[in-house]
Image (cartoon, rainbow, N blue to C red; front, top):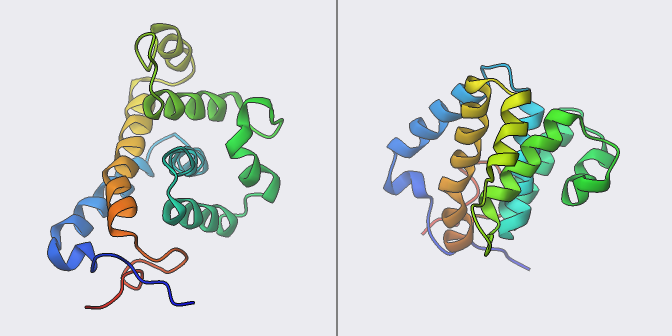
Amino acid sequence: MTIESRLPDLTEQFPELAALSGAVHKATRSGTVPPTTISLVQLRAGQIVGSTYHTIRLTDALRKAGESEERITAVATWQDAPYFTDGERLALELVEAVLTANPYGERVSDELFARASAHYDDKELWTLTVAIGHLCLFIPVALIGKPIPGRPPGKNYTKR
């Protein structure tokens, strides 16, 4: 079976996006929020929106970073999994709140924000917010353009 992307490489059309994405990645990975926490959050975002591309890419990155299969697998069911720290749980709860519609009120409630801000300082909350936004920028790219899962950037699109 040959897997092809729907669209050609986005960075061929918009080369400045590679630099933008690299800058955001560097900014979110240079603070006090552990890079693993950010990757777990982004993996959960990929799962929520149903992106095979993001889910495979982030699972692979977590494996390469030395994360256990138990932790990686349990991201989808983090609420009752014993593998996550309090900070990771709050970050996972935040990304779920952002990406899951709440027909009864705000997605990120004052109560959730209060718990998150008791654990994370302002810069850390901004780091998590920007990390979630960074992946969200590329959700439509993955769902519409369908880059080829499991291939590295630059090799994940069909040449046209």
